[in-house]
Length: 171
View 1: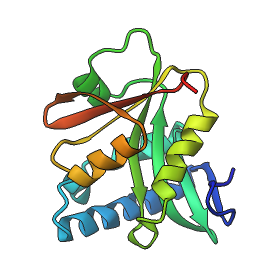
View 2: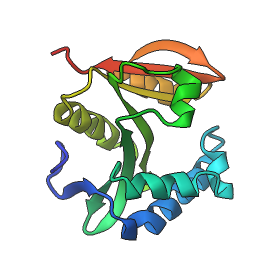
View 3: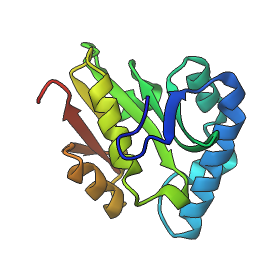
């Protein structure tokens, strides 16, 4: 599968061999955010989600974006709620949503349309759920604007996190 804006990028499901590279990349991005005073993912620096990331990779729920065999972006797409999702969204008994987590792009590829392309790719390739849902830190204005600009609807606020969803059945 290729991203819309550049055919030299490939996307694939991550394998267990990719886990340590993904964790290292996420920690490097978290450190970059901390250094740039962006309030997001500080818990990753302490290994706060290493086991969860490894499990998502093992479950084939994590994707990587490759450029010349180097991982430049990643995201996790869950078809069932995680414990965090239940905390933020409440119990989804109907199971009508995918939950997007850890959409991350390395700094040299930020602000070049990759995030928008990844969201479009997800939207164009999932059809068995009604919504794509995600959350982000409420006081991260740039990230909130990014999701609004990509036609996600702000549907609430829980525990300092903005809750966004996009109806996948609308054309």
